Length: 337
Image 1: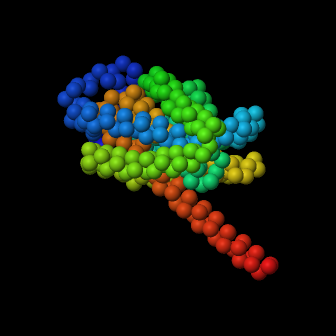
Image 2: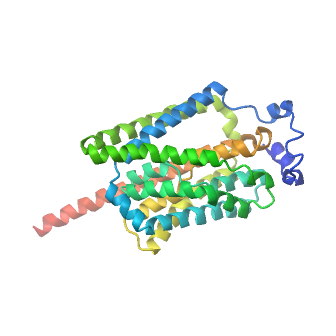
Image 3: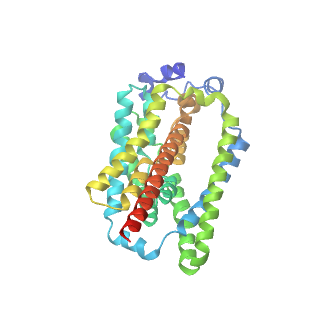
């Protein structure tokens, strides 16, 4: 990986012409063999779309029309979430890339990850933290819609000199991501509105399908990529992958506390720290040829692992705290009686 970075971290990386002209098929295959076979890649993509649809329908079943309307008419929580998402995360990525003195190619990958909007995972984590699901879905949809303008702006501000990146933001994929969130959520909202007795069952089934699919996709991907992930697991990148979501969770909670949000604090925290990893991976595919990006294409997977692990720890701590608080309250009530 160091050899790959050294070949593309000099002044040639910033030149428009000649950026990819010297990359022959032989060099590409030597520097970065494809990690997934075309058939396996297509299979995983189709599976992820199906799972995303089922998951978003089940999450939509937890939403109420009146509460969604309240968040739209009083967008304080949404505004704070957008401020956190596009203020904290790009700046965090920039500071970490500078602090660890990363090569240009690696730094750009980190910045792209930091500039992505919130992902659908934040909705699931907000549900696990018993946050405001209505706010979570509205926030995810709004941040994804704003990504059409905010991502190019953030990348322009933080990626000065990387002219090839400015034309690589996949607007179509961002729109598709928005549709994949809004349409199935709309189905779930309609089910909850007209057939509320089915909502709880659909939610449980959807989350069960999600958990099983994560395990299956993880196993398939691990078998396919084998040792390629080890090229990404350097101490600096591991540290950045661990620090970015943790900083996002922490500052999202702190900012929402400053603005005196209550239940929404946990929701804003999850929305801030969770990035749209699928969109990040798509941008890396569009922006760079395989020979340039090398194994860094796998960094979104590293980030996703840390953001999920850290969120799981926070959820466990929160659930333990809630149980302890209930038990303590029960003991107090018995004493008062």
